[in-house]
Image (tube, rainbow, N blue to C red; front, side, top):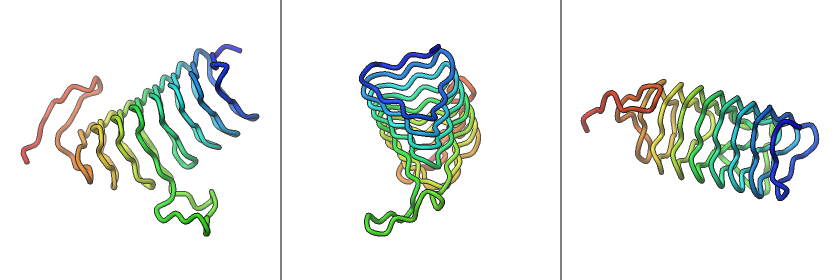
Length: 168
């Protein structure tokens, strides 16, 4: 085994985990998930069935990546950020996984602590979503997003530096 899994974590059958990935305390990786190389999954992270995670992804504590979400290489997911996969969920009338709305987080994007990504949208390459923001539409590449609902407030470069700030 060329990856690390803390003894308190659960890895289901039929999971692929890349070399040099670390999965920390109380995490769960469900069946069919694929996790790339050199990833870090913090404490209490849940990776649902059939989720795909690229290489060099950093997932902070208390994040659940639900079925229907795909994470590309080099993405940062801040503490307690939230993904959804159903726009109109009901406990008594589940739609089934084949009806989940897809969400894509493109290469190098960062999502801040406690941000929410509503399903069915794409977060663009190297975009940065501020802490607490609620994304309700597609995010352009290199956009700096903030607010509820989130809106473009500037542009960032690949290193996360703000290169343009828009007036209110």
